[in-house]
Image (cartoon, rainbow, N blue to C red; front, side, top):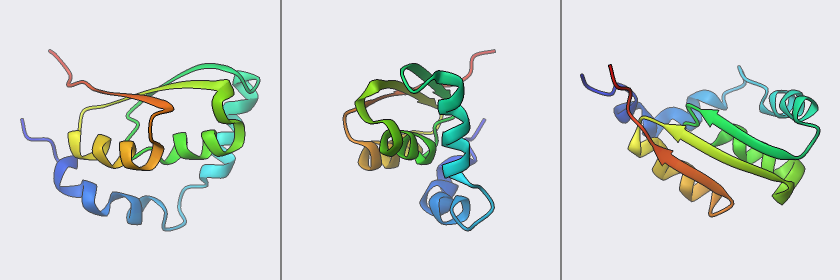
Length: 94
């Protein structure tokens, strides 16, 4: 089965940051649940847009692991996030 996000990854950030999603509000809501520290696992991390906002708000007090099934998305996430976030490639198994 082909990964449809591979071709989309070049345009993903442009689409996802066009105004539909409020990453600031999303990150604030997550932090309210986490009490601003601890561990966070993001399934479907994509290009790291949510993780980026979380790191801007909290910094190193939050340990983040991001998993995605699209290598090209993870490549963009690594460029965006650097080393503070552990990124992992995982495909679904049936």
